Image (cartoon, rainbow, N blue to C red; front, side, top):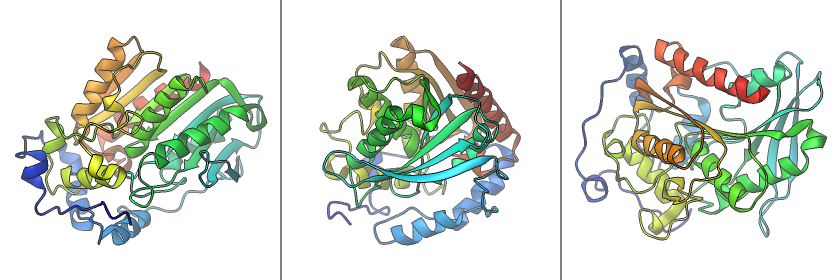
Length: 341
């Protein structure tokens, strides 16, 4: 572990965050799930991180493993490709239609996990149907995670994977004019940072970015960043740990790159059409609403959705709830339009 990581959830609250702010109520259908999550997980620390990772890998809400072949309709492949200069190779999970109909859209996926956990298969089932239907190729990147690998390793790994995908688009059956970057939570923040890198390095061209409840800001200056305390659904203590794992002593200070914390970017012009969403009861709400507003002010086409009563990733953890079904259906409709654009 990196020696600069020191998070004491018992003593950090008032010094780092200020007083707890008021939060909206959880959607009634989600309350039992919130209680289950509270019972299953606590705020991570350096000492508990291995157990925290194991708990999350097992799944808080147990489900059957996903058949990534979708009954034989999807080809599953893994490739080792060059990482950033001077860094190790990275692994890409590639899902492609068995029955291809010519070049299709490419979805470059960056998994979530608070910068501290997860792998290339985390949450990939969200995008499997698009491949099974023959409408997309999905490439999911295995980036190095913190605190073992702090910034800039995660975002540079993601960019290296994206650049490789774009350079090999024709071999992968991807239409290079329909390359979509997508990520949820920490993956959403990394997707936003990778999109900024692609813009600033003038490669590759992205048609859309889909930012699902993204983790964008390390500074804890918004109302929502301080409103969840010991809530068990990525509260402010967990958020502090994740950002500190990534940035160390730089967290909240002046020397943080916008590629690591995209809310810090001053110039948001020239970014791709954006879908961005949030629950009303999650720590990222304020930074997401601000980022969406600033994207729009910069001339970017933005589809913004805030779901009342929803907590962080509740559409994945509690898919049965009406608010989750509405959120998932709305995002699905946007993605399907993007695949056809």
